[in-house]
Amino acid sequence: MARVPEVAVGALSIQDSRLPPVVAGSLGCATFAAILSGGLSNLLYKCSLTDAVQTQTTEPRQVLLRIYGAILQGVDSIVLESVMFAILAERSLGPRLYGVFPQGRLEEYIPSRRLVTSELSVPEISCEIAEKLARFHKMEMPFNKEPVWLFKTMEKYMSQISSLSFTQAALVEKFNILKSFHLEEEMKSLKLLLESTSSPVVFCHNDVQEGNILLLSSRSSHPSDKLMLIDFEYSSYNYRGFDIGNHFCEWVYNYHHDEWPFYKAELSNYPTQEQQIHFFRSYLLESYPELGEEERQVQEAAMLIEVNRFALASHFFWGLWSILQAKISTIEFGYLDYAISRFDAYFQQKPLWS
Image (cartoon, rainbow, N blue to C red; front, side):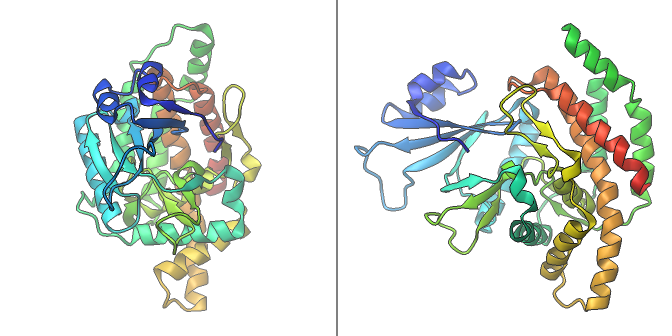
C-alpha cells in the first residue's frame, strides 16, 4: 500500500461526503486521518491521536475508520456483519471492534500491509493462506447454516440488474455485451452443475483476495501470526469449494493498476494443478491431521473438481456484483469492464470442468 499524507479529519469530512459529520465532529481537531485504500466496497481511514492527547493504558492511539459502501447499506446486512466481526475479534481471528455507527465502524488498527496479487502464488504464503482458511472453516457461528447465500444473493443481483439502464454510450455498449451472455439461462446451468458437485458446507469468508489478507508487521499485537484475514462483509455458511475457488480466481486479478479500468487480468496466472495441490495439502493437513497419505491423495483429487467447478460460481457472482456496482458505486473503477472480464473467464473455464 502506498504511503499517504495525513490530513485533519475536519478537512477529510469536506473531501469525502461519505464521512458522517457526527463522526468527524466527535473525533475532534486532535485527531488525524490518513486515507487508505478500501478496496471496491468500502472506504478506510487510519485515525491517530496527536502526542498532546493523553490516553488510558488500554486505550488505542490509532484506529481504523471504515465507511460502508453502497452494497452494504442496509440495516440487516450491517447488523449481521457487525455481529460477525465482533465474534471473530473475540476469537482472535480478526481485528478488535471498538464501535459501530449506521454508516460504518471503528476497528483495531493493526500495523501491517495488504498482500499484492503476485504474492498469492508464493508457496509459503499460499500454504499459510490455506491454513488460515481451514481454521476459518472449522468455526461454529450462530448464523443460518443452510448454504443458501450464494444463489440467493446471485438471484437478488440478477433481479436488480434486470431493471438497470445506462445512458452513457460506452456503458450502454458494454452492458449490451453482458446482456448477450444470456445470464439468467446460464445461471440455471451453473446451478445444475454445482448441485451435482459434492462440497462440504462450512463457514466461509467468501472474499479471500489479496486486499483482504494482512501481512502483519513485527509491531503487531498478534506476534504468532504472519497473516490475518480481514473484511468479513460477505462471510456466511456456504460451500467450501466456493471459498477456495474464489481465492484461486483472485490470483488472476490485480486491482492496483494505475490506469483505466484500474485492474489487470492475467488468466494465465490462475493456479496450475501443482499449485492447487500444494494449497490443498496444507488445507487438509490443518483440517484433518489424522489423514493417511492414500486418503489425502483421494481428497486432493476430489477437491480439484470441487474447487474448480465452484470457481465458475466466483466468476459469475462477482460479474453480477460488478454490473450493479457500475450503477451505484462512487469509486472510480471499470466495473462493466471487470464484469465482462469475469464472464469471459467463466466461459473459458467452464468446458474444462463441466
